[in-house]
Amino acid sequence: MIKKLFLIVLLVGPGLTGFAQIKLGPVIDLGIGFYSKTSDSLTLKGGINPAFGAMAQLDINYMLSIRGAATYSFKTLQTTRVNGGSTDKMNGQFLDLSVAGRFSNFDEDVKILPYGTAGLGTVFTIVSKGQEKYMKGCTYNTAIPYFTVGAGTGIKMSYFSEFDLSLNYTRFLSPMFLTPIDGKDARLNQVSLKIAALF
Image (cartoon, rainbow, N blue to C red; front, side):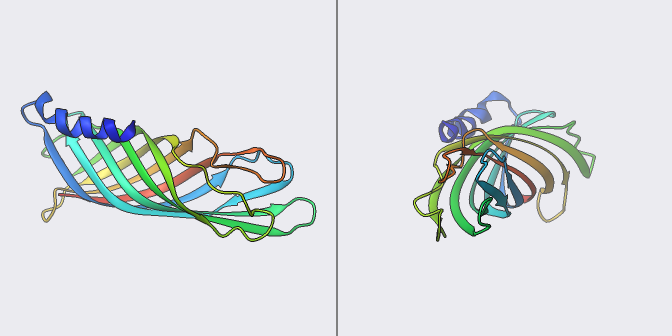
């Protein structure tokens, strides 16, 4: 669904307005993840969740742009048993597709432009590994939807159209996995610093 929406935006969007413009560029996302604690048997500890990929931005008018991104992301998890204190881990690699609106008071004469974003996305599990003890048999789910909001600043540069820096909060809407001991939902939240260069 997210992929189809992204393609529709890129194909139909330029016809919505005479001055629509598409910008492309690389993006790096440095996130820290933390899990909702729904398990009585395990303590869940997230970690650094880096991602890298590409972003496309379609400028609709002076206030609204549509952003689509495709990134390859990594997520880490460490668990500790409440009774016994033994630890285990699980590492994952994901394909992340997202579409978001970017809202700002666009002005061609301004070099630094604050903005806000809100959007939806989905992650697809590519690799789920690292389970060594009681986490054996437990894997990350796939096609996990999420919503994200953020605030950032675009800085116009001479050698590319915009250098972009934003702080984002992401809430996953489905469990990343079920805990192996008591079968409870483990939901991920993430705070991340996103850096992009748009051309």
